[in-house]
Image 1 (cartoon, rainbow, N blue to C red):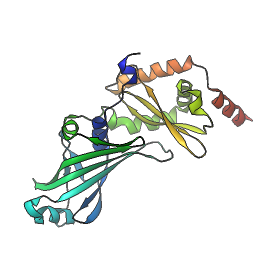
Image 2: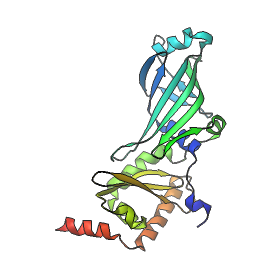
Image 3: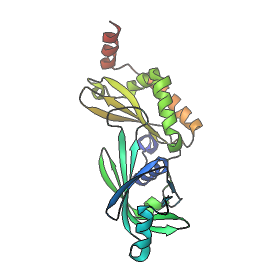
Image 4: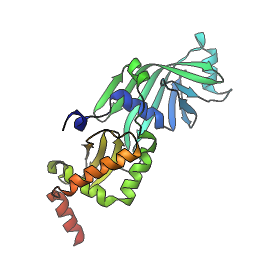
Length: 239
């Protein structure tokens, strides 16, 4: 179905998406480790700007370190909005330098690493600075929780698009992630889990386009045969 059918967000876009929606971060600097909640913003180039107390340890490190630039590592976690086993979908690490700037601390990354279930990937600094977050990232949590809570029948119908072998011994299927390129389902078993991606036929740049892409997937699912594994589970549950 063309390149758009197999398209997925690049690693730099994924990293910027994690950074864009994270509400907290862990900062390791000057031998200390601190958890900050709701104190950071991100500029267009991917620089992290921290609002920290004037008398805080991070502020002191930035002022007292040689050249005013202490080395530091920032860690951000990407947490699935729908409760699933192993909810952390990815972790983002930024290593670099702090500098006091306009009453806050500006962090300039010199190394960016994104770790997902498939492994860790080093993100090029120029690529990271030029990338933009996925346009659906700010509303992903609301969209996924609505799908899981209000439309469990739609989630079940979408499993018809999954390879039946992937559904063997499945005990639960939940929406794990959505981006402009596709929807990811988490398939849970008694002692393990796996993720399956359902790509859209074309990228979705806003909620209206996403709605159309989801309708296409559901139409395709309605025309597919229900996997035998889920047929058996439903039959057992009805007894």
